[in-house]
Image (cartoon, rainbow, N blue to C red; front, side, top):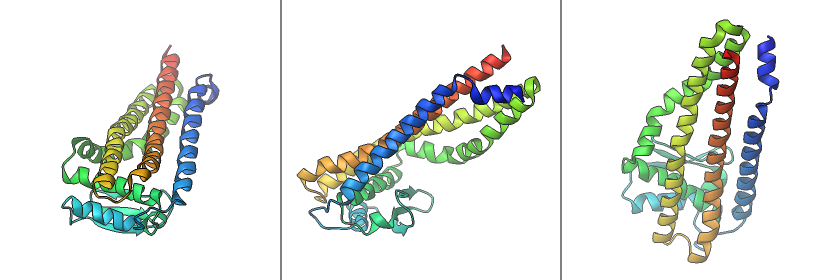
Length: 234
């Protein structure tokens, strides 16, 4: 029990605090920029769903549906069901933010259609990353509760957490590439005007930054776990 208490309150917890602060700043930035450009109507006046459908058709993709879902910033592309899922605030809105987010999710659909390797790899790793994420912390806590006898559980938990971090690192090029494809489609398709590109890029960059923050935060947490494990063995 003393080992677990040390684990919870040791000086390396500063690494966790840094990660939390970075994540909070990234999320705050996203919400500020998203809210700002959600109030700016696009000159084309088309909705997020219309932009998504136009991008898909322009790329010869006809087997992907565009569906509305509940929530805010819950937008995603599901490669299994081949659906671009847009939150209702994006699906029906004609704002710069809505069109940008819709285009980003279509960027993933284009990746899937062209068999973009990082997306294929990420999709394949999803089940393993989900299982690892669910088991890593219980194993680590059990390991610390068992004192020296729990070394195996701690190491196994850290290994599983490493898989989660690697998954998040793989996610970064996928997200940035989808945003790059989104901007290209918005320009080439005439969906937004030249003077609207800057706003669209701000929305997409802010969203991508949240993925970077999460990856950095979890990498710092992983470093902390490795330091604690090493200290414990010593």
